[in-house]
Image (cartoon, rainbow, N blue to C red; front, side, top):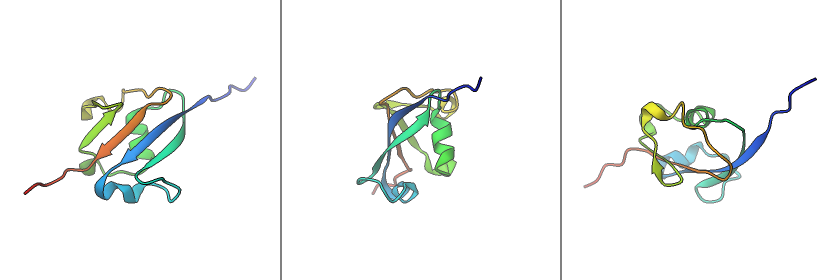
Length: 90
């Protein structure tokens, strides 16, 4: 018997220069993604080929995810994953 892979939907938002990494069907800076149950923050970052040096601020539902925790932070249905690059101020 084959196992059935379950999927869930999340919202994935990229900001500033990172929006170029989103697919063309995005609405503004966000896409709704179907991802496998048990997907981690790092798996989504890797899926979109985001350079590590550009994934400065990572939030899940508004809560900061430390770089050391991104490979173990499991997403749940309807989560919002938002990523900002480093931004220089003046």
